[in-house]
Length: 88
Image (cartoon, rainbow, N blue to C red; front, side, top):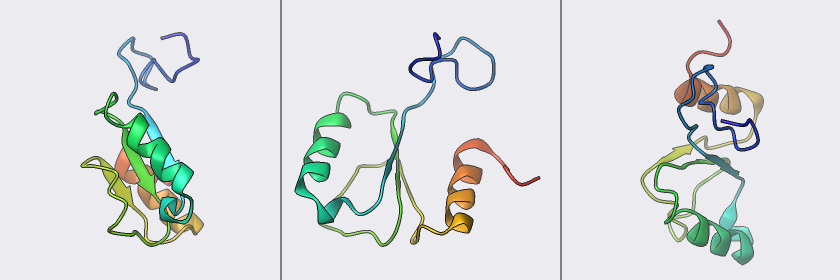
């Protein structure tokens, strides 16, 4: 990859990276919900990291990591799930 799209997979290989979309509470802003609905279908490999408390009215699809809060420990736990241990 060229680095502009996260395209080297983060491990030095040439395989494409997996898009990660970070959202806070998309149900609070209809424009954010609309953007998710437009962005995700053409990118089924994308992972949505949803911080805070989820709302069942907004379903980002199957590839979602819910943190149930936006404290640092929650972000580190999400990073561990996505990329392996970050604190070791």
